[in-house]
Image 1: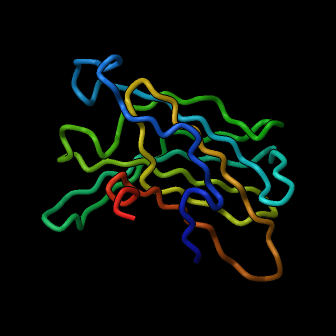
Image 2 (image 1 turned 90 degrees about the horizontal axis):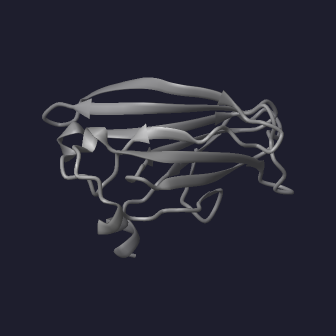
Image 3 (image 1 turned 180 degrees about the horizontal axis):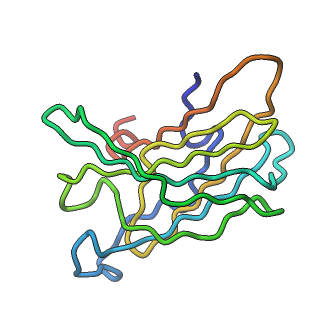
Amino acid sequence: MKIFYPGRFCYPINYIFNNSSNYNHGTDEEKTGYLDINVFRNIGYTPIEGATVLISSVSYSGQFYEFGEGRILYEYKTDKNGKIPIIELPIHNELMRNHSNHNFYIISVYAEGFYDAYLFHVQIFENETTTFRIYLSNVSGDQRRFDMIIQPTTEEIHSR
């Protein structure tokens, strides 16, 4: 298993934080943002048509966060441009006022002839589109593996 951070195989294009001009005064549960996914080959950077993209919501709870539940929200196949439709989702991010819900998104990407990729802790911000370019590696030999991409928080980014 390899762990890749943005800048290697997954590039978040728009990772924009809310500003007061577009702030919605509703509850966090009512606020939404958008997710835009593009899937490419990591060699030649050409789009992959027919890749399966799953968007799941994961919730965890318990004194030590020992309980978890995941739900697949959307499943799409990429078009000839390696894209899926832009998806509107409830916000989940590190800036939310109520962190007691402990929710986050996972994106899983599968394509025949390529290693799978998983993006953990995908954050959705109010009225913003978060765009990911996901680059899949060709399968080589009998080795079974997958790429895991963990999105760093702003605290992790700024402490480096």
